[in-house]
Length: 314
Image (cartoon, rainbow, N blue to C red; front, side):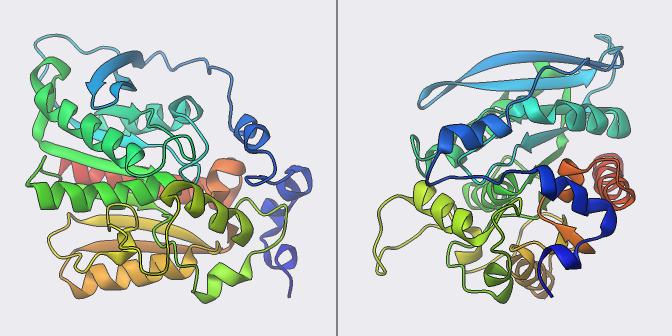
């Protein structure tokens, strides 16, 4: 059976309209697909843009918080959100609505990082920006009104890969302490040797093998077979996943990241990390973002929003 015939009927129509990303041929055009107009923000969430100091000068973060907070409110739990885009596409603005949902569901503060993209800024630029943002959250806990004992990280796709890498980095550097990580359908293995990495080749797939190989090349830069690749770049290469925080992840069955995600989940469980995992038959990469009103999308997004709310408020 081909890719499209295996899709859930409610998800099929979008792929007849989606032109497909063209990373090698026209990266600028592909980036334009993920540009978004500002949404009409929720009256219950206040959003501010901040420029924070970094090794590269400054990095932009967007801070989302309940709009009715007062100076006497107790400190709230907090989450760092890392947008998707295969390390080469995307921006925080495209996830405004999702970040607002997290704020409302978990009564938390969300910080979303505008990390530098490859190929203009290959590894380690993106993970450095993410770690800088995480440490800034911890350092500014008092001014942000956040509880240092309740900090989580999350992201999707390439942002899921950065989430997994950031959890490793925070573990190895001794902090900031994390109570939860949520790398959704994460891009975590550059080797592209799993069965699922060969399954998705259709040009109009939201992420297919050609783009995946090209994105990794852009992110990792020139390397040879003998090049040593850091697990902070490719989390699946980590020797151990022990000591990571409790984890939630999900994947569509028709996602080329399916098998590397399943392997990651199995390794977490084997190394004593609590992990919750969901796989959605007939669903493609980033399905709940692409077709948000589909029944399976509503179910998937509500599941991970609820998981974050439980983790931050338990």
